[in-house]
Image (cartoon, rainbow, N blue to C red; front, top):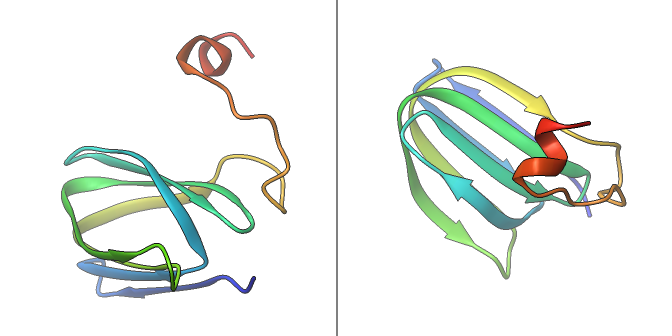
Length: 87
């Protein structure tokens, strides 16, 4: 599946290829995508819409950072809280 990410003035982000919302708060959203896990950090973050069927997600708020957390392809081992702390 393709992965597209568009960021508009750090206030709105549109992502394609999203399979699951792993966790979310006003300061961090963790997503599972077709190319690996993604972390979006910022303030006032809100999920505006998510379609698991299409893989489309829109979020709003102030985006400070965007990063892939594991290897391309999403084949990496999913880790719980302790797995992430003690890697």
